[in-house]
Length: 249
Image: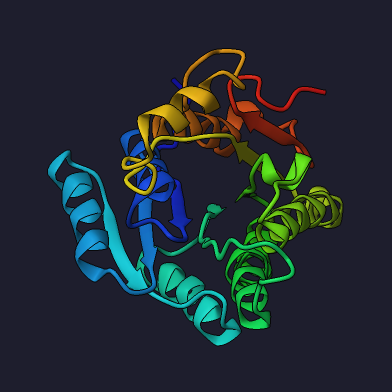
């Protein structure tokens, strides 16, 4: 198991779902983890409690990372508290699904700002500190919807495709400072948000997955932890699909 001893990580949107799983896995491997949240302080503090209960280091920091000033404050708070930032996981995200003819402009703006602009905001702030240390790992959580598109998700698919472009461009910009930038693209993942889907829909979606099962948050977290590790030092500008083979080629 790739270790992250003495590393400091920030996970945006880290209070639940995939973000929670990533925060727990990074902490299990030895990283001090800043669990960023926007609104749900209780959930973020629960993640911190689990990490600390297992002997790890963590803290919860509120910030709406779609706002530049708050993203900058998140990174500054991390550095003030832990002395550095080694790993940034841009996971904050939301959905406002609808067909384009019925989608409101505000739903487009909300999804683009939350999913894409937040990653740019946090990366811009974090990379400054990483460049001085000549070390860093930036991992963007995109989606198979950003690779293949998804009906009813023009805003979400565009934001996730944008994250892939951001990943590749930033990887080129910072490579000479030994900073890697990669993306993880989950497919269908079981979380509290999908727990109440009808059984017949789950079965139908399973048929589209070559491995014939939905992913878990741990499946995604393992991929992130690898890309955050020293073992992945020669990997940058890549998109790793964690989707059971849903989107091949």
